Amino acid sequence: MLSSLEIAQAATLRPIAEIAHDLGLRDSEWEPYGRTKGKIDLSVLDRLEDRPDGKLIAVTAITPTRSGEGKTTTSVSLTQGLGAIGRKPMLCLREASLGPVFGVKGGAAGGGYAQVVPMEDINLHFTGDIHAITAANNLLAAMVEAHLHHGDALEIDPSTIAWRRCLDMNDRSLREITLGLGGPANGTPRQSGFDITAASEVMALLAVSRDLADLRRRLGEITIGKTYNGKSVTAEMVRAAGAMTVLLKEAIKPNLVQTLEGQPALLHCGPFANIAHGNNSLVADRIGLKLGEYVVTEGGFASDLGMEKFMNIVCRAGGLQPSAVVLVATAQALEHHGGEPGGGPAAIERGAANLERHIGIVKSFGISPVVAVNRFPGDTDEEVQLVRRLALEFGAHAAELNEGFEKGGAGATALAEAVVDAANQHIAFRHTYGLDAPIAEKITAIATTIYGADGVVFLPAAQEKIAEFTAAGYGNLPICMAKTHMSLSDDPTKYCAPTGFTVTVRDLRAYTGAGWLVALLGETQTMPGLGAEPAAFNIDIDASGNTVGLF
Image (cartoon, rainbow, N blue to C red):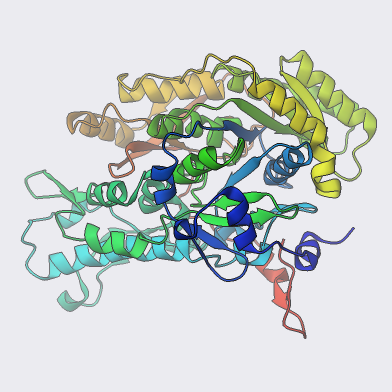
């Protein structure tokens, strides 16, 4: 079989104008971005305001392993499978961050014959949205420094400035830095740091902004620090929000591309699910629901991360309710959680506790999931059928084999039929916590209900922030948990379905523009680092000028 890059490079893409026309977009509602990409204007939402929404399908997964479980591949193949059975699907995915592309995880366009294309563009600079987010974030940082240098009329206390710079690359040396060295002309010396752009508040708030005016308001409400008298200082107060909005006025428009089989796909925003809220933009979902019969959207990593945040944060922000949930599982992941990679049925049986836990997480929101058993080369019929049987025993609505990687949409038709059936069932959707609950109670509810923890330990810094944020009036905001994606706990070495553990909250951040609080668990970092063998080692240009090694 060809590599995913070779498949993408050999593909014949439909003209993007044809994709837009088939969606029913008017010429004034979209613009081409080269030959294979487009931007959709948000005015389409005004025109289609009275059109009934399609059905929203949320794709998630069991706890991932380092080899990946193919969640994006499943999302794409499900979209292709829905097209193959005569439905009108729309795929909504996040944009790829350069950090993972050149790090360990690789790209974010799917794989094999279940991809969104143009794969190279999508996995690299795409339409420049993430660069615009980086620029807007760092413009605010620069304007804060300029304000301090030119007299500090707002009387900002430099020691309270919490606004960090960002970069769309894994660079561990920037996690903690000292600013302003070299004398008064070079700024005010203090400790600060960088986050990866996907973890920045600008990325977060762009992903939940409803329109340009809402984006402008949210940018103005970013809190950067405090005055010497303890009053909050916002981006609006340092007069940065307007210019930041101008930098983002094109980035707020969702990007239109296509699957290998020609179904439309909206790729927009790229927050990570382990350190951010991990879902594509709200405007992409809203546009998709007006243009498509079924909208397939994906939360990052597993149901305890991207899906939990989709349900408790994104659905609240957008007034959304999923019609069905697809839970991706693989035989090889269950073998890993069973303590014996490649161990066959016995290891799968032991590791199935992880699958059972994730089915329970989905059901805690009032939805019985459809389990997609994503088949990898080398998986035997016995192994994949065992995963299907176990999923049904654990209470899944359905469990179907997905062979989209090798067969495209034709390999996902049974999964598509099961999703259509699930989406027609009545659900009693519910959230994990009420917004009026105290901050500590909301964090504890997520830890106990979703992760299966016995409780939460709040370190002194976290306790201080809880008291501070409650006094400031932020107590009714939802919670975005930043924790490892390698375990249901906050310890990446605890595989399968750990019990008898507590999680530790070391600190909190207030994302007042995005509209939630971020709880930092365990040792989770908001700026990743490259490993000893990053994917960048294998990415190059051949003698003909073609990209090689991208995956």
